[in-house]
Image (tube, rainbow, N blue to C red; front, side, top):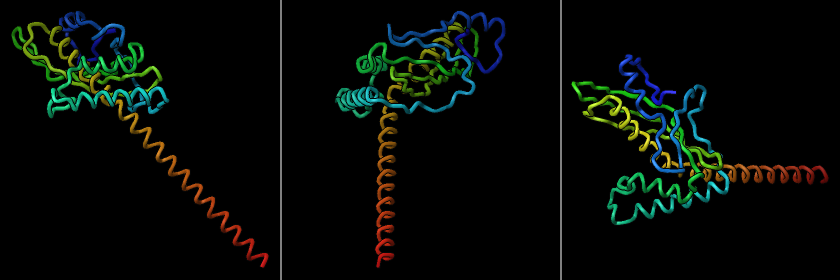
Length: 216
């Protein structure tokens, strides 16, 4: 299957050049293979909120270590924006394990293509899903851009690689949302349980009052 799900028709020449672009991008060994999601029709655009104890512990550890990076003076006020992507990948490997998470490209769209004599430019947007060993998922977008490259396939490859890197980084940083959603859901369930107990107590009190009235 071709690595690029383009939203416009390619000429035979363009298709031949595009065929030279690798369909799978591996940024580091033994961790994640970026595979085209293929037919994602019917896929719900939402993240899997299932969170078990392992996931909670790992996400908490990841967030703690990210905050340590963010507070280091080396990165100044820019926070995590100044942290290299490979450092964030390294944290994910340490926290989840090399085989504890994987990524899948759900969509890849090219736009703003510009072709001049021996100069090719384009932008790419990638939608990517991270799946943890527990089954929890997080989806995010990333964008990339290539400017004035000598070959069209090099242009496509560079901007896609940048987009995949950005989407992976954003998805890793977005895993904390699973933790926040879990806490919110727990608080809502506790509130509902307390409300139910209060309603039950009020009902019992009313029944007791009616019983006393009937006896009197």
